[in-house]
Amino acid sequence: MTPPPDLLLDEPAPGSAEASRAPLTLALAHGAGVPMDSAFMAAFAEGLAAEGLRVARFEFPYMAARRRDGRKRPPDREPVLLESWRRVIAALGPEHLAIGGSFASATPSTRPASRTGCARRIWRRSGPRP
Image (cartoon, rainbow, N blue to C red; front, side):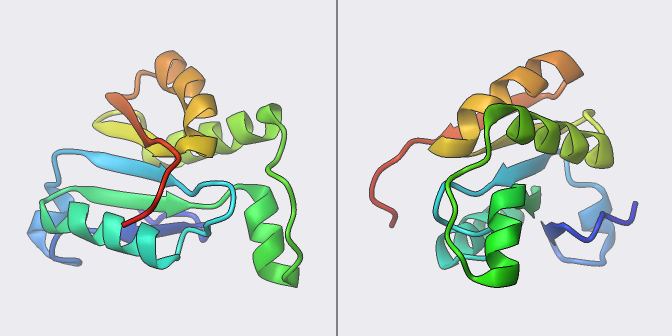
């Protein structure tokens, strides 16, 4: 499956047979002030990929707009966050999919996870980043 351009994939041994056999894909959302390619998000995703998971990072519309024009914005309202999650889940398929992210993205992730048959939902609470 070719991901939409707004997904950044981290896979076990990219391009190998192991990548296609990953037992679980984690759709990982950024927090309120951290883009999907931040050092923290990259280290987290790469670490999970090294353990055999496929990780698909994405950005909510407000962060994508910030990337384009450099202006900081508050997070999108919940309906926009929920629709973003639904699009990501549809693109990746709910089978063998866990969804989660930093605290700001976690609360809205629980609703689409429970309604779409996602395998799991996880998130990281606010606090200092390693």
